Image (tube, rainbow, N blue to C red; front, side, top):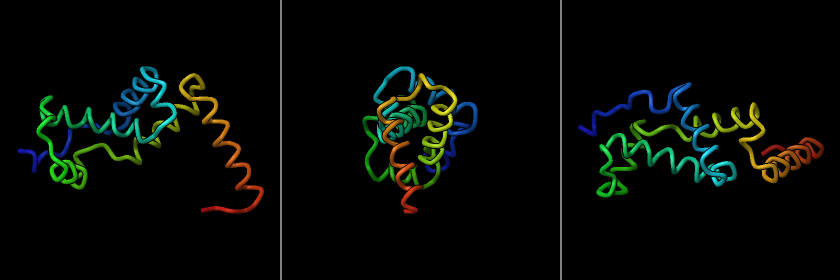
Length: 114
């Protein structure tokens, strides 16, 4: 069953936006850390796929689900977070926001792009 699972809009559009917004409001840690946010999204994906029985999920099975596209794309999650934080200042951590802005300004002035 899991091999054929392709998700059901778990990482799509407005549904993903609502999930990310809920997490950003719920816990300030997710405003600061993309890794924490992505981990939580993937945990919720796993709970949905495995009908709340995630304890038996091994690394190989997790990696297969990730490879097959059954878990929400990390790019989609971070893109969604950036969009929401640009639209809603209350969803961002100001110290992280100012730090990123400072680095961006420095990169523009030095002409260094990774």
